[in-house]
Structures are given as structure tokens and as C-alpha cells.
Length: 227
Image (tube, rainbow, N blue to C red; front, side, top):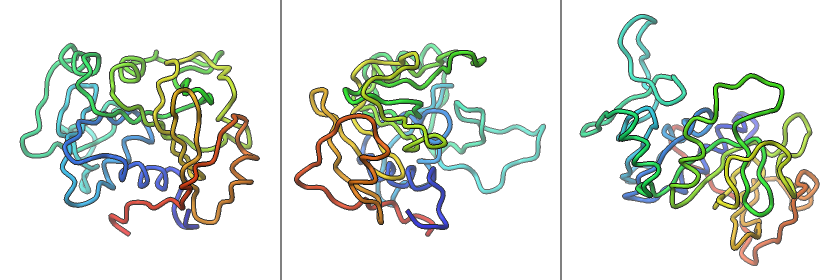
């Protein structure tokens, strides 16, 4: 990760390269929405937002003043909608999510377990609005990509077993942090990529979960859009 780039931007730029031509992909609230800004040129895919959009685009450069009409994503933040995009009601949106029509979803995470469990919606004792569509997305999407920082103020987030309320069990396909990219195969976690300047030993020191190292381990490459 470059010194001038935030951890969140680095993660979003790496995930942008995960998405395939022709995919229909949901971007969850928070960090995942940044992925829309870094999609490589020539990759044609459709981004879904659970508040009722297909065909959302990057955050617009010129955000209108408060009080004027605007388009917002599921997190309530300004977004754009591309030509031929569409809007619809919540029931249609959740039917897309639950019906297996999404090729992938990108979700934030509080904790991920070594078997692919995900906790991303509640910290006990804190007020939260609810799970939203996270469970529907994690169960319905063909691939579940989690975007989260490796640790939280030094506390490990990639664990042997989640101790926060679960969103879904054993559904995470790929986990991307600012240090590493892991994939999950039959309940086993495999380190496949490391960030520039980061060693496997450093990743192990910041990870409670057990993982194996891929025979094809390589350095992470990120989207260069806007750099």
C-alpha cells in the first residue's frame, strides 16, 4: 500500500479488479461503495444498490447542494446512475438479492472466521438500525467478497471463530484487507496475495485464524484508475 493512499482506497482498488465483465454486483454500505470509483476501463458490469437501482456509477464529481434532488446509494451517499440504468421498489430489489441473480456482492466486515463465517452488522451494546439486506446478500449472491481492514486499533478481526453476532455462516468467498487477499475453499482459508511491502509473517501476526499459503502466492495489484 502506498503511503499516500488510505487503507480503504487500497482495498477498494483491489476489489475493483475482482469483478468480471458482464457481472451483476451489489456494493454494500460503507467501504464497498468506493469500488465503483475504480472499475477498470473496458469492464462492463451492472452495479446494484439494495435501495432500488441497477446501473449505478461512480460518486459524481459535482454533488448538488443540500436540498436539491440527488441520487443516493444504500448508504445514503450521493451516487450516479448510468445510461440504461433502472430504478424499482424495495420488493423487486430484494427479489434480485434473494433469487440468486447477483454474481457477487461486496460487503464490509467486523469479523471473518477461518471457515468463511461473517459478522458485519452489530456490536453488542451499540445502537444499530438493523441488519438491512446483508444476510439476504450474503446468502443470495454467488460470490461474497468482504472488504475490511486487517485490524481495528490493533484488535484482530480475522478469527478462528467470530464472537460477534453472525450475518451468515461459511459463505465468504474472498476477503480483501490492506495487507492481504484470502480465498476460502471448502471451509479452509488460503492466503493468495500480499500487499507490497508486507510479509507473510506480518500477516500471520495480525491474524488469529489459521490459514495456508498458496503455492502461487503473489503481490497484490490494484486498479490504477485515477492514479
